[in-house]
Image (cartoon, rainbow, N blue to C red; front, top):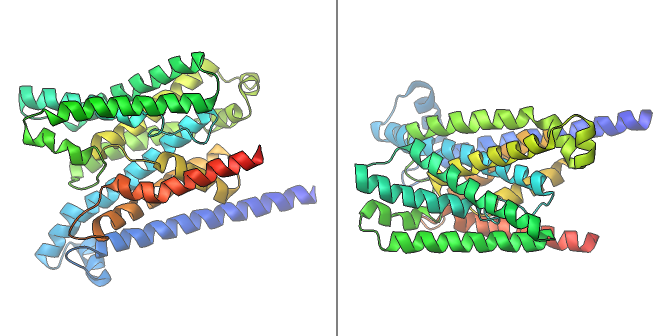
Length: 344
């Protein structure tokens, strides 16, 4: 009994330390993102502008119209992408499953590009909600194909290869269509297709906050069924979980999250795999009620940090966000695969 209490105490203490560290990192990176740029702004000025909206008009405009929307979108979309990866890893029972690796982001990108070409050509504009719906449809198409393949292919490795092939096919179709597009806005999709948080507005933040917030809440409410499902389908059924409905819910929620990211920022690589793995390693647990909020925070910190590097490392030239996330995320994935191979 005493050993159980001691274990519970240590686990709780570890959770608190990890969450405090993530929140502290989130605060520091937020300040750095606001402070650093082509126009550096002191911390004192940042506080005054945020609290009172007073100060140098140029600095006020830079913070409220450019940097804050970008920072908030990086946090929201980073958290959404990480949570989407966690749901896919739960669904496939494999830590290497993620929106980018399985071709889900590429499917969303393809349908978004086709939708932009049609709507801009026909109506001269395209709304954020249209892009989100298009990305969601593309995500579901890719997931549907993967699920069909999973019934015929044995082994997760082969399924992952199939997902990668889907990603290449969707990317090839997107590049082909965009290359021959005449509209300059569509041609600029070449930059978007590699991922970027630039050009975000408060309208984007509002829509993303509603969509990601509601979906994240729904995921959190599924913590108990997810925990049961992690112990096996038979155990989950014995606990009263409707497996068919539950699996559909996982796919739909994951697709909404990844679709939101792709619609606003383009496909972003490795975040959905690396962050959930690192967070679970730090927490030393896979309990959903603890992991879900930690994964969201971890994704926000990771993407905000990568975005800071992307726009400042070679300023005034800005790197694509996927370039930076690949540099930091790919080694984590390689290390994870090597570790799994040793454990077998």
